[in-house]
View 1 (cartoon, rainbow, N blue to C red):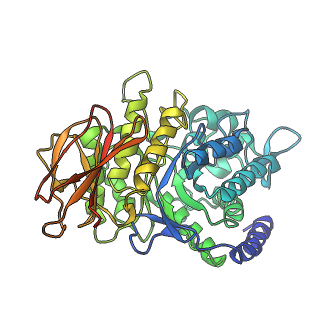
View 2: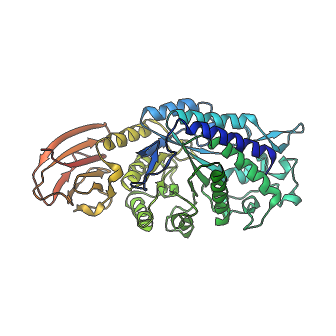
Length: 467
């Protein structure tokens, strides 16, 4: 390790010790129900959206955080990215314009440090993506990336084994940059600088209690790459007296693809699961994929995150906010620990934190203010006479049932676990206008008929009637 990396980590450890004196537990799976996160001593549902993904590079990130918090949001995504030459890269330039990978660019890191600090103050969780996949292919790699041997003074193409030009889409995974770990090509020439970069990321993040770690964005690389970095981060965290949580984000949209099993089936490597690419699926297919993951981790539950919720249908030219909102609500009723709207650029296919996103966040928060989400389970089997994608059920056995209708409908609810003769009351939440109807008393019954008051998204909250 380089001496400057050691110094950064030692400083981070000292700052961590000071912070620990005045804060509670770092973010972690909630011990009572590890499908959800606990943050600062309380279980939390992570909801979010933002205008940018490498948010620390966005000049208005403070306003973005304030907007997010004002509508009940509490999570952002931050890729360690530089989209082009207009945003700073992590390393310092020399007099001839090339980068020196032994020296950092203060502007880049001050922005990152500033974002972490502002998010920390606002109780906002930051899911950091270490390797911004698209920065290492095509134009960003060929023209701008400091790790490209033609852009730095630290190694040549021959010494590093890295190409000067790469015209491939990242799904081809043909950049040797992602083959450096000892268990793969053991490319120490490049790996030492990669490790130095990660050390600087950790020197910043170890100061805070609100950070989760994703190794990559939409990756198609060999699993040995992500495994190496997850282990590297855990080892560094242990040395700093920390416990951190890592994941990998795979590119395939189908969660049954075997690549996803590298996270789903390996809690010893990845302590939580990011399934963002499932948010290209729609309706029942989207929810069935969530059920598949829930079933797969039934004996070892852990948080399932969605750091990107798309608002576009594959092949369509425009963004449809309704699709994004459907997937966002669907993730909550699918038992996920987080759901966040993707950025609103054309390439990003999302709605960010626009009025549709803000209304969705407010709506979910309002329902959950009346429902014990963290003791609930997904119980769609309690719904009878249900058509495909008509309704979804979260249940706190014998106490509460929250039935979400994406677009009106009628079903029968079996109030499983309720005491014999129990009476119920039903309230309806209108997710479009954010207001409640009811409650209305319902006599004891083995099946409770629920008919949404109209079209659009509604939630029926069914509870045992108080004496």
